[in-house]
Length: 275
Image (tube, rainbow, N blue to C red; front, side, top):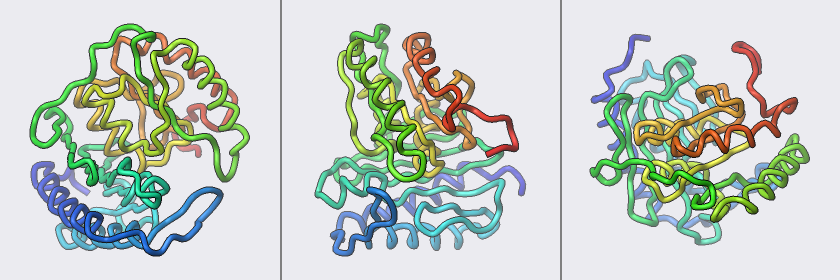
């Protein structure tokens, strides 16, 4: 489909997120279902995804949609991608560390992103080429230049298929970073980590096992705030990537070589057209 009007798309995304935030703030996770190894879904996840899917379909049915809970429909090249509650386990335990992440993707790259953090009262957004914002104010990545002053977010250990490989990678990298960085944190929500890189709360975020709904919105927000968002080999991150490294630029030369531990695993970049 033609390149979408991003100003109109952002307005549509913001209105859809309004509905989602209102629902999340006013409904409890009363029905929690296990959908895999240490992975859960709640009634709120499902309701938020349905609200946003229907709202955006009404706005422009030609744009496809990919949701974490109910899969994909429509255009496979230009599509919305949503994680209705990133950090569902946190949410189900009453933790405020969770986020609603909505991105618009074309040709394997996010064009815009809106990430709401309902229980902390913040919203982040970005449109390609127009900077990144939190609650309407411009944001930028940190100016940290050394790893011993850096606070790093890291993904959870493995679950589901290939969990043992992810466990090994996380353990190895965790040990290296714990010995060299000022701090390492596991927040349980990549969507939140990415926007915290964007506003300088974190200096970097590392994820093994990229899923587009977790990263599309945060990737464009972090990039527009001045972060480098990379694959494991230091190449630019896309929706095909299996790892995500978002970092303030001065730390890239230290962190990218550490990602080499993913070489010869399923988390190393693959040629275009392969999975």
